[in-house]
Length: 164
Image 1 (tube, helix red, strand yellow):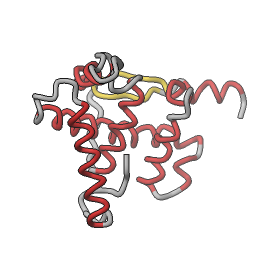
Image 2 (image 1 turned 90 degrees about the horizontal axis):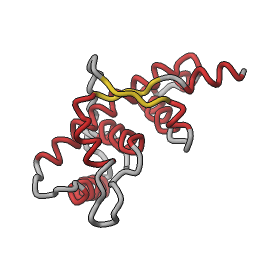
Image 3 (image 1 turned 180 degrees about the vertical axis):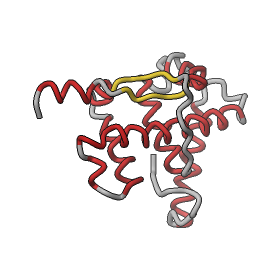
Image 4 (image 1 turned 135 degrees about the vertical axis):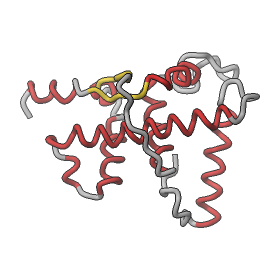
């Protein structure tokens, strides 16, 4: 791959809906009383988690015209872009989605699951207003899914089998 092509894909924007900015602020900027650090160190870490939540609950949400972006190069700096490609591969079940000319389609799949996951996480936290930081709610939801997968072997047709 040429140097120019390499720079080109790094500049692709991975977007999320602006309406979730209060959630992103809560989970990525405020320090937790548990560790004196935010729940997620970087916004992209929350985006990856949210995309997996969206995927595992088979829930997508399209982008609003008003969105916030992070470049794909930011995800690739610590290899988190692999999650974008993995979700696209799981969705499409075709390795052609991993070809360079399909990167925009892979990013779109990730964005839709990410926004769906942010919606779900937002609901979880709204349903548990006593959990100011959101940590206990997130841990409880992860644990609930692990228990469900171990009890029914992940055969719940409404959820996709992914452990986050």
